[in-house]
Image (cartoon, helix red, strand yellow):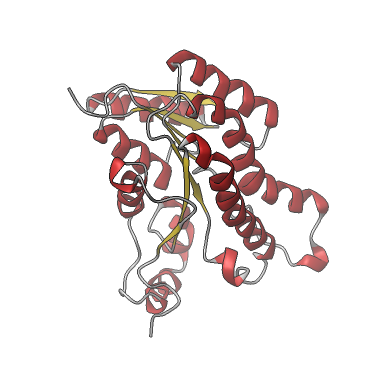
Length: 254
């Protein structure tokens, strides 16, 4: 029997890209994995893939920017399993680009909801069930944009990710007394379908990105998943309120 058998991990935004690789890795580690997404057909396919690998997995379709949907679904998951051991707030994204002068309030609120509100909603709902977990932890996603404020038109994305960095440390302070650890990862440029359009239409631009990365290449989703696997494990039992950069030295390339 696996040491982790019976442990439950919830991963938001897990029907593709980094999120799916995180779900796969935690499933291989022995967790029952609960994937969230908004594309139900894709979610069903992902569950088939994981099940074929011998991983116990299920899918819950809900929008992480909608408070009621998040709360009701996280409650349903927690009540079904009696606990949650790991919450990975993977869902998020750029949401588009807009300079502040032209930025609509609707766009501002959408990007903040996608990255910061979603982290708050899911974490708040999961806390009662994390208290029942074993070596329970939350993993959030920030970005280098949280430090450098992002590129042109990505200022509100950077602002939202700075908020995720702060809420990670705030949650860690709030939950330490219960033995719940809270950490964040900050992926650099990872080679996922997220970049498929520019990869196919402007391959020279895509290829140039590695020039700003010290290790001279883009990261792989599995490399983010392996760090998360460590952070939620007993090997990281004394690590909380930290943000791990997974960028190959991005910003230090020559």
